[in-house]
Image 1 (cartoon, rainbow, N blue to C red):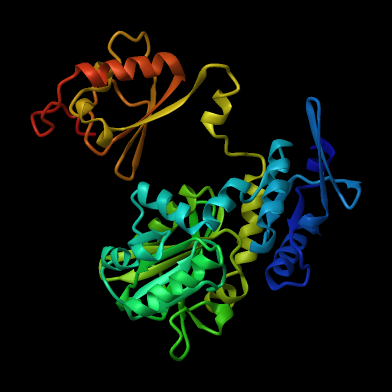
Image 2: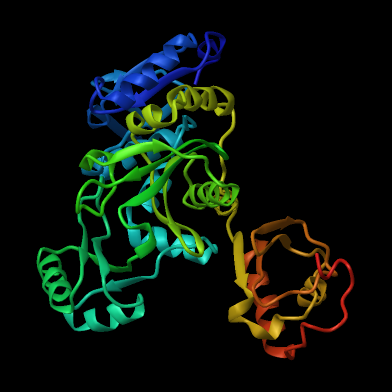
Length: 405
């Protein structure tokens, strides 16, 4: 991007197929109020070029000239939209949501896997590939009724509530027959017909609303004629919403939360959340908050350390889950890497905390995740040696203050 573009402020592109759509129109309005040069560009009108040692992109046959992108990529064009975003990312153009983040959020199974792995509470869910597995799936999620859904869908489409075994089997069979990937999910009785939408921008919730279904409908989506109302979000719900968006790699997200007896459950994370319902319900200028975030964050890009280090042959990032390697539990980080000139651990994930450059004296716990970087062959050799030669130690004994950090 050119310095001349910076002198005149951020040059913004909203990737959308409909300039008159409420969300797109509001983003453009707020950008222009702030004096930004903003254009709506159809993501299907981009051409991507790859040459020896370089890449380029054109829109409707013309060179592009913008600094930041807010993607409004619909489900029907996910594949092409993500290809465009990835191309822009490789060119160093800032994107409000990355292609990878969009892909992760749109696959409901993958999203649930990532969230559950990172201790985000989600409804119990079973991936079903054969009608013979339906009975076990129903039992695994707590019994009837159950929610049956396809792994990819939007605005409540492909989501069904079933009350009997026969109904569930018939529905699953029909969905599998049409080539759909199917999930059977726990039904949260206490939240019937309601959920909370938290709109995350950056690292905070800027607006929230409670959505209620009408009549016998159990899906509360605004586009299914559900009603919306303002809600004061509990801090625990805010924290879960922000963490869920971050884990899926989204800077802007609509996080749908169920109000269970045990606290918030993340139902879904939307990478292109509609703004109409939540602006009207909350009274918050969400579009303005998004544009303000773009202005403040455009100069900075998230970089995956693993991707960065992979440009150096033989180097990269490894993570070690202590649950899978009990021989390391109770050892200190220094003992694990005994003999190494430098401890190659740059972070330790413990509970909901991430400890950067942890002290070598910290003892490892059963639920820790070590994140290491360096020369991969050497890292693997050192870790294998520690796993095979170190006896499991008690973890409830005396420990230093650092060990209990």
